[in-house]
Length: 427
Ligand SMILES: *Cc1c(COP(=O)(O)O)cnc(C)c1O
Image (tube, helix red, strand yellow):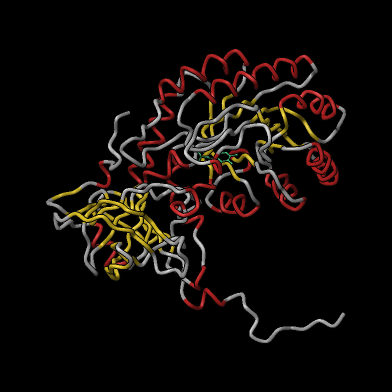
């Protein structure tokens, strides 16, 4: 707790910003901008702290690829013992390619296609978290066809109140599209028992992201425990209890890092009483603070009484400010000491294309390097080619070395799938 927004991995030496032992400016010069930079040390530190806090309870961490599916990040976490949590066939593909085995992978998501369910079964995943009765029957049919028994978890909507910074990242209250309503789950468990090719062995929830308090975990888990008890009574041995992701990170001075020991104290006794293995699926908690976005200042301008810093990154690279009204600390890699109140905006033809508004921050000149902090989660994965902007590069730093782990897209990449001479089909 009480850790600065600026982790020690992104700190200043003699006034210039470093990523671990590599100056940010060196990376920007060699890899260009905009570029996401991830610190292997931060990933390792955060993984180890969570694993240590949960050491007293039988558990497995399944990193949520949704936050950042970069292969280098997956490798670092896999080597530490992490499993994977995926929500699409594409993420399953990425997880397998990064070396995760089927038994390391949990498959979730509210709208899995038949094809995706088939792929998950063929990969031999540890758990498929089912979100509706219709999905359960589709899974039964596909598993029958493949001659296997599908390991099933029920994603429960525990109907708990969640306090977090934006409605789009709350998912566990009545009326959300996610999960099986908790008061319908027991009936569905009884129906599942009659099916030959599904075995209900887990209960799951994911109540939201960037959770401001630990209370939703306590309340939601209590719901799962009650349900599990009744399900065991109905003949469904619940072996896994999956409490999803949602651990918050510190974006702004007012935010706090989660108290991992308090988290463990709330979770562990309940899980032990359930005699189950705990599964946690953090995404943001690992990835967010591990990454920064580097961007170059293109222009300064004054318009309509406002000062603008126009950067070569915007909503196409980091959608969070415009989509979630999210705050990211922004500073100069080499501050002049001058401060200004500015809007930091990108080059995209949208008024919603901003990284910060009315922000007092380092004053910047064209050519200066901007560092947008805590951008490792829900950054690159949400980026787009809008305005035909090639996607940014991704770099990993490990000590005094760095590597480009995703090349910047080229113009050719933008048109690679396009058909110059359409193959018309007469019907
Ligand atoms: C998004 C998501 C996660 C990860 O959430 P974070 O807030 O990034 O930890 C975990 N599990 C499920 C099912 C999700 O949809």
